[in-house]
Amino acid sequence: MSRTSPSPGIVGATPVWWDGASTDLLRSREEGGTAMQPRPAGPIRWERYSKPGGGHRWLVRLDPRDQRTYRDLVLPLVTRIERSVGPLAFAPRATSDGRLRPWPDARSAWRRAVHRSIVRASGSVVIVSDVRDCYPSVGERALEAVACSDQLTAFLRGTADAGVRGIPVGPDPSAILANGILAYADRAAAAAGCRPIRWVDDVVLVAAGHRPVIRAFDAWRRALAELGLEAHDGKTRVFTDVDEALVRIGSLGRSV
Image 1 (spheres, helix red, strand yellow):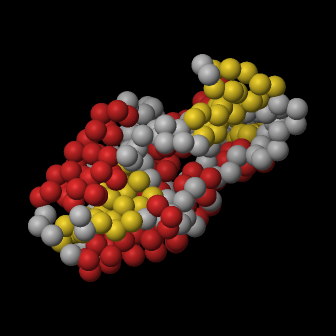
Image 2 (cartoon, rainbow, N blue to C red):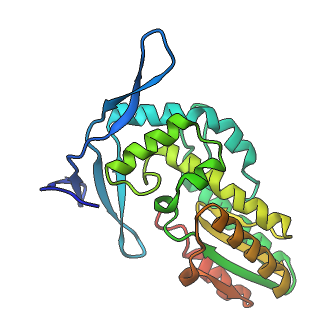
């Protein structure tokens, strides 16, 4: 991702870099018509945040006009996406107007669900994994899974031209899209006998015995591949010790 002579700013103790790139995002409509017309977009702002567990993450702040366009293009998908997401997916859920509900309660609910699932089953085997480079890896195959419109696809091509890989990390509409995309893999694992307990792209699968949990994990991995996504092998672990699994899971979700 190239930035020419970035100008640093500060948000708290976090450096901020303003990218001067402009894109031809879709914004205006022809008067009296329905065709979306391209317009020069405002600059994208990149914010670097330090993760509690180490490392950092670049967040994308779109120009306010582009942010509104993005929300308007995702809004027609919200009801369908929310209906498609299973009861054990605890990523922040969307309101009817396309905004995200507060995430702390959702993360706490996810941890409680994981704890109940692990301690309830006798002889639990637990697999913990996540999606490698989730948002940056989202391409048109994944977008097709949530029936993105041509206008939304074109908008995201515009952000790609500005240097954004996949869907931008930060805006609420991206979280809504990601939740719908990952629900496809959730359903595949559930059909194989084990529904993932998911926080954003962190997943926990629990079953009584190795065979059923591995079968579900393989189904989840294959479904991700169909979307052009990939399970993160470096973060995938199998636990037969319940206490060890709970300690590991307790450290997840802190980078949100």
